[in-house]
Structure formats: structure tokens, C-alpha cells
Image 1 (cartoon, rainbow, N blue to C red):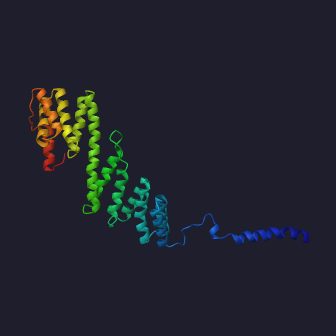
Image 2 (cartoon, rainbow, N blue to C red):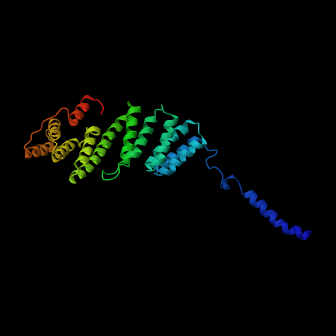
Image 3 (cartoon, one colour):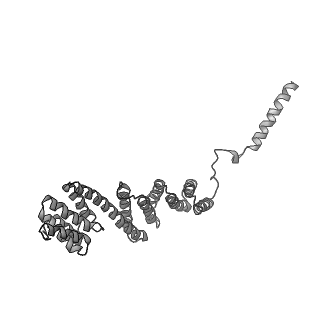
Length: 279
């Protein structure tokens, strides 16, 4: 019996030592944020953001929301997590965080900024016109929300500038495809692309060239009235443009002069934009 007791004693002592050494800090399943104040978590996340650890900062801000869901700190952290993820180019998570803030606080003073972050997350992914412009269209859609929902905000003014650039990008894509079709003698397909520029993106820098290309395409098809109208509208609106000079020279080469048919879709498109009506 005494020999048996001697055998279990070391095991019992080892068990007591292990139990005594184990605690909350050694529990792999313990919540590292439990018991911490919202202010301390926010301060640490902000420190990470200042050090450039953007993704870690965003994740810590989200942990703050989880641990203190109804605090003012959580509300602030929601916006900051969107910003942190945006800075870390994790655009998907940035949009999710920003949209969550808008859903919970649509009338908050930071709502315009949250919407602007969503727009920027797409805008920063815009690529050259030779590639797919899906991000450009998404950016334009979200930028327009900033202007429409928060018209008096500083972000609305910034968004409008980017709307103009996004429209110019989309017009450039249409022009690139239209030029290709024109070079392939696919004149109807080319005209449709240039028509899109005039009807949807008329205020962009590509409009003078679109009118010139329409002149070329219609002359190639033998549709003289539309060619003359395109040249006339080009000369009336952009008289100093190199594209008007090129278009006028082309008309002279055909023994024609610019003349505007006011019943033409080209003439009507410009009148609609001038009067402010929609197409």
C-alpha cells in the first residue's frame, strides 16, 4: 500500500503544478479584448493606423465594435475601419464597413464620408481604356450617390470632379471601340459608339472628335445630310478645334459644305443638352 502511494504522489504533485500555472492568460480560447475599455482598443488601433498597419488597424476597429457594440466608440470605429481598409487597399472590406455605417446611421455627419469612401474604393481601381471599365461604372454610380444624397457636403464637390473624370474615361472607351470599327469599315457599329459619346458623355473632352468621326463614317456610307450636320454642329460648338479643321477639310474634299439639319438626331442631341432636358 505504501509503495502504491509513493507511485501516485509525483503524478498528483505534477497535476497541482499544472493547475496552478494555468490561468486566463494561457487559455488559447480567451478573448483578448474582453474586459478592455473601448477607448483603449480605439487608441491601439489608431496607433496601428499611424504606423501604417492599416489592415490590422481595421480589424481591431471591428473588434471594438464587437466588444462594445452600442457605444459611441463603436460608431466611430465603424467609419475608421472603412478608412483603414481603404488605406490598406482592401477595398472589399472597406466598402462593407462603410455601407454598414450608412445602414445604421444614414443621417449622421459622417455618412457623406462613408459614401465617398465607397466611391473611392471603386475609383482607385479604374484602369486604362483598353481594359474593362466595370470599376469606372461602379465608381460613377457611387459618386453620383454622394452628389444626390449629400449635395451640400464637401464630398459632393469632390465627387463631382471625379464624376467628370469617370465620364471622360467611359467616353474614351467608346471612342477607342468606335475608331476600331471605323478602321474596319464597320461604319454602322462605329456610328453607334460615337452616338453614345454624344448622348451620354457630351460634356467630355471626346465630343469634338466624336463629331468628326461621325462626319467620316456618314460620308463613307453616303449619308450626306448627317455628315454635313455633324460637321456643322462641330463647327458651331468647337470652331477652333483641330477636329473641325479636319472635318471641314474632309467635307471640302467631297465638294460639300457643313449644313445643319435640325431634324437630325445630332442636332437634337445638342439642343437637349443645351436646354437641360434628358435624353
